Image (cartoon, rainbow, N blue to C red; front, side):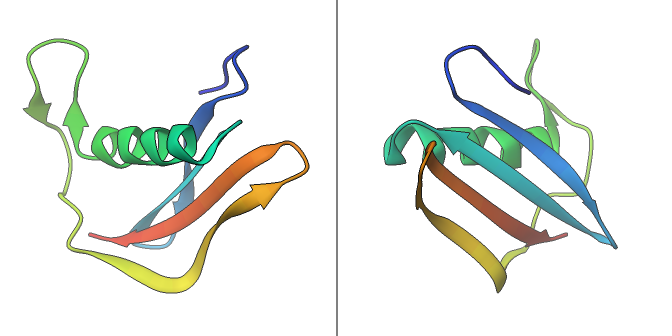
Length: 81
């Protein structure tokens, strides 16, 4: 999901796990986008919250990325489901 505010998130296809990417101008915004992306992988939050997928069990440390860059902060993480 891209927005004009420079913040966003997306899920990326990744074998049997879930990989999410998030970005924002600042660190706090990036974390907020990452959390929202994680919740969206298993819950429908458009109305009454209901489960729609497998709840993540763990965060994989391999390929974990979080830090500043020339266009703001970004992160990527693989979630074990």
